[in-house]
Length: 98
Image (cartoon, rainbow, N blue to C red; front, side, top):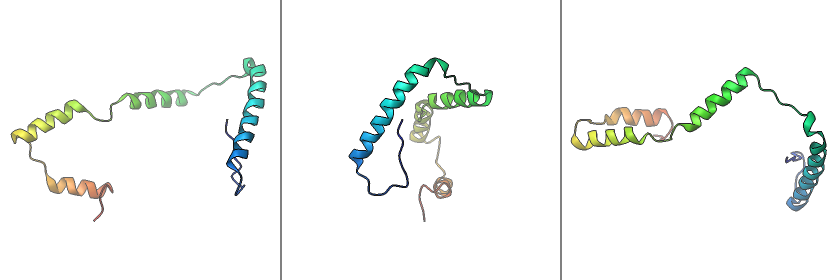
């Protein structure tokens, strides 16, 4: 657990680290004693969100099979990229600016 005072300015980072460690050690001792009383219950919506998040994280960033298929089509000339459409998409998504 890391608790920071957002109102303080110009504090020494070393002092802050010591304070945070002191809070962690004292709270962890308290939590050890009361750990059997603590319970967490997630709503159905939260569980569905977690499952969806896990599924999204399992999807690869790059679909290499699709990239290879498109690469072959471009190399053979069976797919000609629409450069105007690509440029408009890049501008529309803010990837490039004019």
